Structures are given as C-alpha cells and as structure tokens.
Image (cartoon, rainbow, N blue to C red; front, side):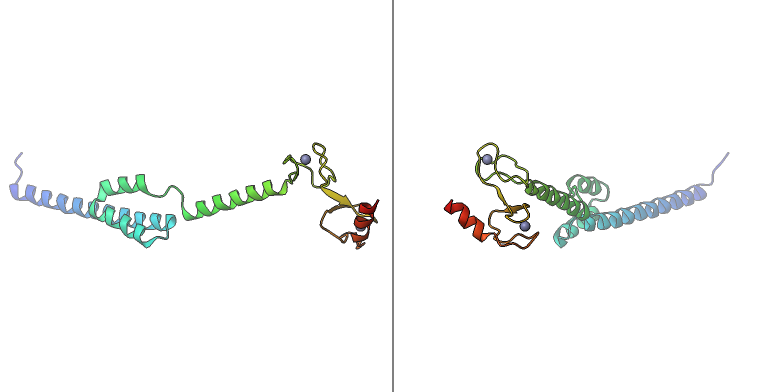
Length: 154
Ligand SMILES: [Zn+2]
Ligand SMILES: [Zn+2]
C-alpha cells in the first residue's frame, strides 16, 4: 500500500496545527485558572502579575512552581480562620481568672477558694452577684456604695 507523500505531509501539517491549537487552548485555560486562583488567594497586584507572568513564560513548569509557592489559604479561608481564632480567644476571655492567683474561677463566685481574693460582691437588696466596682445593682437598682462603706466600717 502506497501512501502519497503529499497526503502524508498534509496529515502531518493538520496534526501539527491541531496540536498547537490544543496546546494553546490548554495554555490559555491554565493561564485563566491561575489568574482566577491567585485572585482568590491574594489581593496583592504584584503577586497576581508575578503568577501570570510565571505561567506565560513557563507554561507547564510555571504551573507546577505556582502550585508549590502559591499561598496555602484562599482569602476566604484566611478570613474564616481569623474568625475562628477570634471566637476562641473570646471563649478564653469569658473564663474569668482570679486576680490573686490566676486560677480559673466561675463568674458567680464571690471569693477565690484558693487564695481567698475577693472576686465579686452580693447585692445588699436582692443578693445577686455583682462585680466589685459596681456601685449600683443592675438587677434591682439598689445603690451599693453605702454597704461597701458600712462593710469597711464594721
Ligand atoms: Zn485566687
Ligand atoms: Zn439587687
């Protein structure tokens, strides 16, 4: 079976064109993907340009390098992580500590059981737990200043 060299060269040419077209499409879609991906990860225009240039210059290797050096977290993930951290810190803040010995104490304790530091006081009228600086009971409105003084006088 003889193959006409002209047809053969035409086939090679078509395949080459298809191959180039395919690679160009692949390259463009990679470029597009990197551009979209980096914008999710950083707002720094320098980083975005750097990533795009890297992929333009080194289509395949550039993507691998980009994959390795790109920021691990997207902006959204970073935001989420920051929120979680803040929530955790607030949770820790909520647990009061004894100013005398630093142990964890319950918010409604009036004395530290370990070092006997005064933590809170009780309302003279309704008996609810009040913070020491408060001179007015937020539950019943009774001024506390008087008792505080009379307590000291006793
Ligand atoms: Zn204590
Ligand atoms: Zn009260």
